[in-house]
Image 1: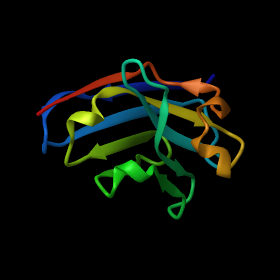
Image 2: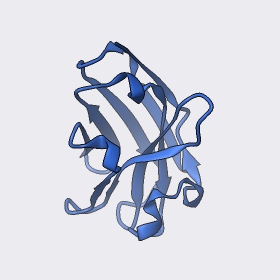
Image 3: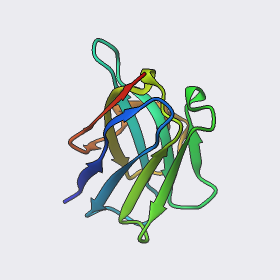
Image 4: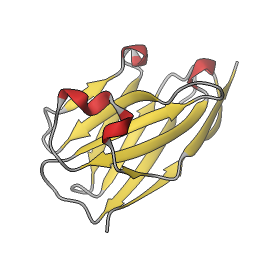
Length: 126
């Protein structure tokens, strides 16, 4: 049974850094995509970043602009999203999500992910 448990997040000032973690279990160690999405109040859920089972498999939304980095740690069991520097518009609930069918162009589509973490609130003040 696949389980995603998030940790990290919280409140920060603009220009600060935060790191989100997603502990994954019950999944395959190849042919998966682990992604981060976020949802601000009143807005649709949007893609942030994704990582696959190989080091050359990373993808970032344009708005990240080099500020965020997605990591795979502890083999394929722990993933993180380092965010620095933060902006007030980064305020949202952040979710990690997993699919186990490969690395595809559809990785930015949240509807393609069957497994989700519980969500982590990130609040950035100016």
